[in-house]
Image 1: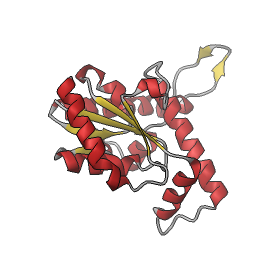
Image 2: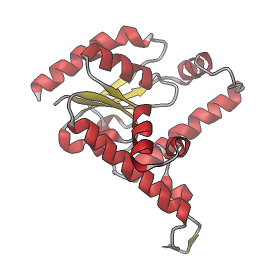
Image 3: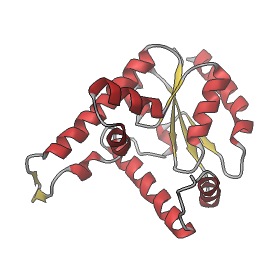
Image 4: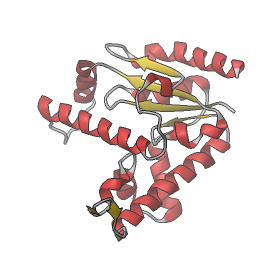
Length: 204
């Protein structure tokens, strides 16, 4: 099986790269589809699943007393259920055959399947431009607000990963291929990455 996981900095174009790479290889890409599937299977609200996705679920726990956690409240318990349900769904989708999975610590979740793990990053200006270009009609962030949002989301992704592995988020040693999209058109990079992926799996 050829399983490819995409981890990415916010605004780097990782989601677009994942979808275009899947199209190039002729395999399914799973991203927001995971949220829909988990919500439907377990009866969770889609917005709630989306809110939990890739967040450090420790923020939903009550305060600590010394070094001892007090009993988790209902919100904390639900956040754990949603996280585990997403991981279960990722494993199920990956076991069905070749695919690209974006985010949600899929590289760690699917480790036993020996996926090709890609990390996508870019410089601050490129990420800012990409975010501003792709902003929805109802999104009106100033440059300062967008930079703060970018930093916060990446911080949450790093903390989410920390829950499941000691391998640092974004550190090159944690991945097989790191792609810098700074100032680049994503679709122009995909053929080279796709061919790299083919050769990588042939070597495996």
